[in-house]
Amino acid sequence: RTWWGRRRSRCTRHAWKPRGNEHCVEMLWNSRWNDLNCNKRRSCLCQDPRGMIEGGYIGVQAMRNYWQASEYCHVHYGTELATVTSDEENKSARKLCARIAHRGGLTHCWIGLQRPFHEWDDGTNAEEKYE
Image 1 (cartoon, rainbow, N blue to C red):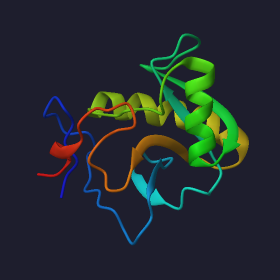
Image 2 (image 1 turned 30 degrees about the horizontal axis):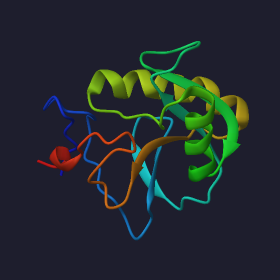
Image 3 (image 1 turned 45 degrees about the vertical axis):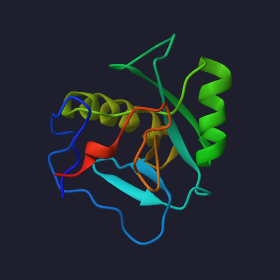
């Protein structure tokens, strides 16, 4: 299975599939994605920032669980956790995640996708995610 974005461009260069019953998605240091318990604390990437950016994202170094991270993006930036729909966006997100998460000790960041993985947190359709 391969993740496909809304532009029908391959979002990752590797197969990604959910494991187990984990409900939220983190980006790993190597640009791979992993479903994870939403209560774990991670740095996060917010969508459509109005500040210092990398690609279309802003990095928030503070460690939060998924819901706290989502609320932070909404309250402070008026947006959601990152929506990643192309390989180019994945590279930008990975680069920013590596920069901010490394300072916090973990090289993982929350992005805006939750089980059942049909829709990004910003409402973008994710139904075309698998080939």
